[in-house]
Length: 236
Image 1 (cartoon, rainbow, N blue to C red):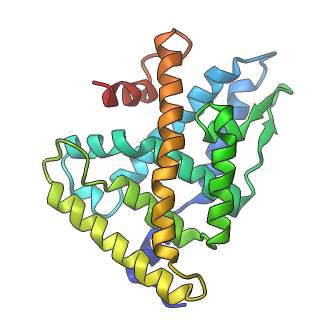
Image 2: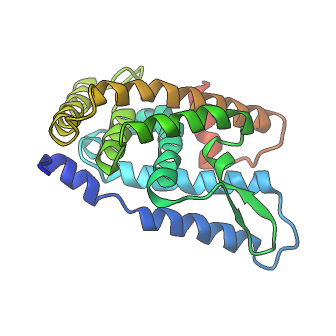
């Protein structure tokens, strides 16, 4: 199958084994020699670790790495939760991420709820998205292009180098369009159908963020973390 050099580079930068290894590593590490842990607090720690990985990935990625730190932070503040939900959809569809896992101390940890940022009532929405993506034969190249489209959002207010972000966004969009037409001619309009999933992912992510922010305001979430910094940044 013919793919553009840009998409080939994107795909090579994806390290799914590392994603799951760091997730399970943290879960076991936090529950080793513990009778019982607060599962919400543990979820926040996982989200926080995930955020650091997102930042690390973004800072080393094409288009994004050329931006000034202020622009980088603005883009991440507006996309981190969407990218997290997309990561979970990808991990479930392509790498058999289960709904739950048993921790070192015997407690069950809800991995599906982690992908919903702690809001179990979003499960139906999430599962519908999962089914939609499966029907579209959503693959690794689609996933990483969609992730870049989320990150390179030139509609974010206050960007200094909006032009660079927009150019990056347009190049990724064009690469994804060419890829879907070349590799999936049997799926009519796959490109537009994939783009139509982005706002639906955003609904899940926004509701998850609101839930975490409420928990934080009520004193139920750890403070002084990157996660809380991100939640506050959007609400300034």
